Image (cartoon, rainbow, N blue to C red; front, top):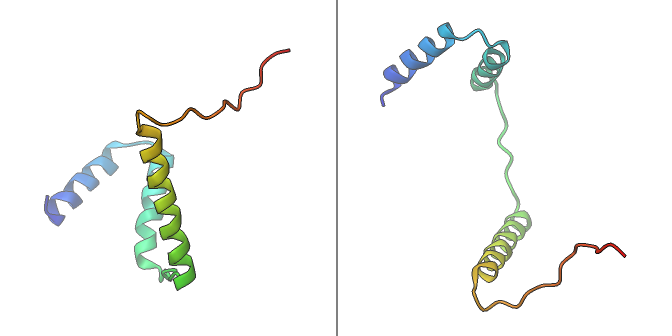
Length: 80
């Protein structure tokens, strides 16, 4: 979809809605474009920590989907 088509569709949706919250959020998002927003840059340590966390998540997902995995004890407490 071209930029012109997107603009036309957006204008049409804006004209049809009476949802004040939606209009406020749309305005806020569009205002961000005109502001100078500083992009946060990660240092090497932060990047490494994120990569390690991603590996741990992937490993956990693979282990959970494995049919031969051992069952972990439940964290649920039983009524006594």
